[in-house]
Length: 365
Ligand code: NAD
Ligand code: IPM
Ligand code: MN
Image (cartoon, rainbow, N blue to C red):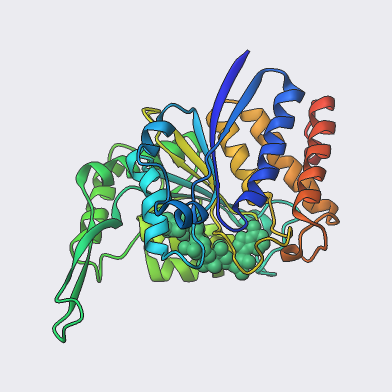
C-alpha cells in the first residue's frame, strides 16, 4: 500500500489545535479508503522551541524536511519572538528553500458559509488566487543604513526575476486553461514603475501563448474594490507575493472568514516537498481555549490529498465541510457557534465516514 510521509510542523498558538483536527481527518480518510496510509513525523519547531534553543528550527532542519512527501503546517509567530525572526527563520525559509513558488488560495463561498456581502450571489464568489510565493516584495532584499542616526534610511527591495515572474504567470495560464476559466492579473504599474511595469509586460508576453484564454488586468487598488463590489469578475487570479497576501485575507473575509481559508505552497516540479497550511496565523487572542476553527486546516489537508492525486477524496473532504456548514450546528464561535475545535473535527470525520461508506457526495444529491 502506498505510504505518504508527512512532516508536521504544528507551530504556535492555535496551530497545534487546528492541525490535530486536520490529522484526525487525514487518518480517517486513510482508514476509510484503504488505498494509502500516512506516517506523520512531528517537529516541535516554533516560538516555544526558540525560547528553549534560541532558534526556530534545527540547524539542518531543511535537510530533515527534504525527505518528506509533504509538510503540514499550522501557524508560526507568537508574542515574545519578533515576527520577522520567527517567520523568516521557519515558514518563509521553508517556502524559499523548497522553491514553493506557487501559493494557491481558493476564495470560494461554499454552501452554508456566511456571506459577508448579502447582495452577492454565492456562485459569484469563486476565485482561485495564485500568489507568487518565492520573491517579489518578500524577497528579503534591502538594507538598513545609518541605524539610529538622523539620516537613517531603510531599503526594502522588490525582486522580480524573469524566471520567477514568467513561471508563476505561466502556471496561472495553465491552471486557467485546465479549469476553463478566465485569468486576471493584478499589479500596480502606475506607481511601481519598474517591478510592476515588468510584471505587466511579462503577463502580456505569456498571454500570446494562450490565445484561447480570456484575460483581464487590474491595478491592485481597483481590484480590492471590485473583489467586494463585483466578485464575479474574478476567476483564476495571478498576482505578486505582497498583493496576494493582502488580497487573500480580504478574500477570506468574503468567503466565510479566516477560519475557512486554506493555502497550498507548491513546488509543482516536485523536486522538493510542498507545504499545506491554513492562511491564518497563530491567533494569540484565542489560543489555548480550544475554540479555534479547524476548517481552514482541514481544507488544507484536502489540498494535500488533491496534490497526491486523489481528487475525488479531496472533493469529499470539501463536501464534508460544506455539509457541516449547511447543517449550521456544530460550529466554532467565529462562525457564531458554541462548539469546540475538536467537536468540529469529530463531526467532519462522522460526515466523511458516511459519505465515503456510501460513496456518494451528500451535498450534491
Ligand atoms: P491571525 O490570522 O492569527 O488572527 C487574526 C484574527 O483572526 C484574530 O482575531 C484571530 O482570533 C482570528 N482567527 C484566525 N484564525 C482563526 C481560526 N482558525 N479560528 C477562529 N479565529 C481565527 O493574524 P494576526 O493576529 O495578525 O497574527 C498573529 C500571529 O500569527 C503573528 O505572529 C503573525 O506574524 C502570525 N501569522 C502567521 C501566519 C502563518 O503562519 N501562516 C499567517 C498570518 C500571521
Ligand atoms: C501568509 C502569512 C505570511 C505571508 C507571513 C506570516 C509571513 O501572512 O501566509 O499569508 O505573508 O506570506
Ligand atoms: Mn497573510
